[in-house]
Image 1 (cartoon, rainbow, N blue to C red):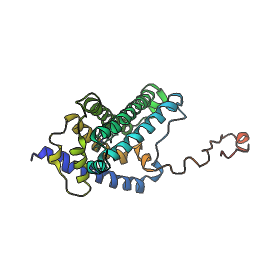
Image 2: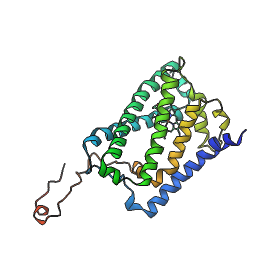
Image 3: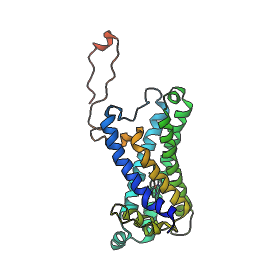
Image 4: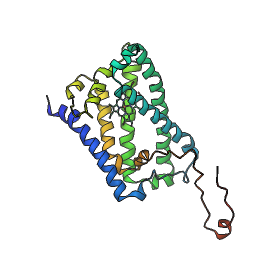
Length: 240
Ligand code: HEM
C-alpha cells in the first residue's frame, strides 16, 4: 500500500479528529470570551437576511444527509426493504437541493464579505482561511454529487460500499484505506478538503457551531441600549 494512501485515509482522519477535539478544548480554556461567530449584522443586514438562513439551513440539511449516508450501513436499509434505486433517489434529490441552497447562501455571504467595505475591513486572515477551506469541500461535494449521482451513470456511484465503510472504520480504530483506492477522484478530494476544514475549525469563528443554540427560540431578544443617558433611562420591553 502506498504511503500517500495511508497518509490520506489512515493518518489524516485521526489528525483531523485530534486537532478538532484538542483544539476546541484549548480554545475554550484560553479564549472563552472570543468563542463567537463575530456577527457582522450591524454592518450589513440586507444580503445577510437571505444568505445566512439559506447557508445555515442548507448546510444543516447536508450534514443530516451525511449522517444518513455515511453512518447507516447499506445492510440496514436493505433489511428495511429500501432498494438501492430508492435510496439513491431519497439521498440525491434532497441532497442536491440542499447543496444548491447552501452554495447560493455561501455566495451571498462571500459577496457581502468582499464587496461591503466595512465587512471587508473587519475580516481577519483567519476568516479568509476559514472561508476558503469551507468553500472548497462544499463546492467539491456539489461537483461530486452532480457529476456522479445526478448526471452520472444510472443509479449513480454507490459510495455506501466504499466511502461509508471506510468512514465507519475510523472511529473503531481499524482504518481501511484500501477501500478508497477506486473512489472517484472528486469524492477523494472532497473528503480530504473536509478533513482539512476540521483541522482549522477550532481556530476560527466556526467554533460557534459547537455552541448549539438550544434556547434560541425561547430566549428574549438581545437588547441593544443607547449610551446616551436620556435613551438609556427609557423602559425597554423584554421581547417575548
Ligand atoms: C470528511 C468527511 C466527509 C465525507 C466522508 C463526505 C462524503 C460525502 C458524500 C459521500 C457525498 C455524496 C452524497 C450524495 O450524493 O448522496 C457528499 C456530498 C456533499 N458534501 Fe460531503 N463529506 C464529508 C465532509 C463534508 C464537509 C465538511 C462539508 C461541508 C463543509 C461537506 C459538504 C458536502 C456537500 C455540499 C455535498 C453535496 C450535496 C449533498 O449531497 O448533500 N462534506 N459528501
